[in-house]
Image 1 (cartoon, rainbow, N blue to C red):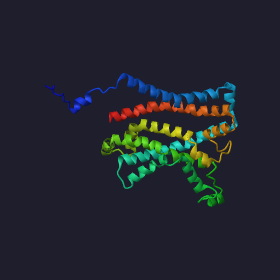
Image 2 (spheres, helix red, strand yellow):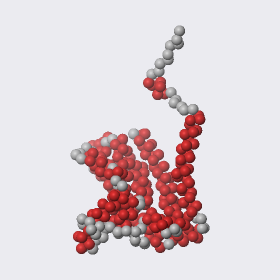
Image 3 (cartoon, rainbow, N blue to C red):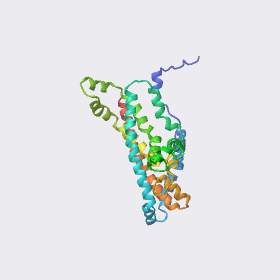
Image 4 (cartoon, one colour):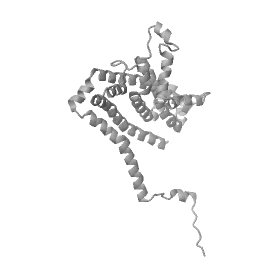
Amino acid sequence: MAAPSKTYTAKQIGNQRISEPLLVRWGLTAIALAFLALFLLVPLAAVFSQAFEKGWQTYLAAIREPDALAAVRLTLITAAVAVPLNLVFGVSAAWAIAKFSFPGKNLLITLIDLPFSVSPVISGLVYVLIFGRQGWLGPWMEAHNIQIVFAVPGIILATIFVTFPFIARELIPLMESQGRDEEEAALVLGASGLQTFLRVTLPNIKWGIIYGVILCNARAMGEFGAVSVVSGHIRGMTNTVPLQVEILYNEYNYTAAFAVASLLAFLALITLAVKTVAEWKVQQQLKNN
């Protein structure tokens, strides 16, 4: 006589610990670590190894070279302008999308995601088409002595375009998960819209803002495609750090190229550390909500 089969409820099945054999778990972990070492740790170690291959003096000389300093300065200026503007846009867009219903809401979400689907090179070419000497506004701008393309304004505009989704996309799901109860309660108690934002909304999303700003800043400093198209590669004037690295590498000045590249590598490591902390804080907020 066959033994009666044992049945489980859905709750019992969900509470059972699902585990793979030890060999499978160790094998998957080894594969993940191998990919991590091959595509992240080894290239990162190679950058620093090449940068310091000829000693500290050569490294510092490459960093202090006038064109390199100009590239670092332009990169910082670009990020200093693009990130705050994207912060204002990201917070405003996320607040509108998460807290209100209005016509065109889905269209706004689609437009925010547009830079993710458009190649940075194409976005740079669009600015050339609009503001270039032969572009739509080129003759008028030339007549009024206004230069966008092959100048700092063009670099900033291209950087803003490719980075503006980052902050909004981090804040939208966070603010949607929080709902509108706290804001509505503050308004009922007599708080103004600005007071509600500063005292209720902003404290709840501060770690999401930090996380989005980190990602936006990292992309702004490391952007290559769009900036390369609109910069004109003018040494000491329109070259950012990634463009300076490309020029030095193409000139077979490998030590200087890797020395300048190490600055971006340092930025990546710092960004990764701060991003990890901010991401953990955001996940804690989502769990608490």
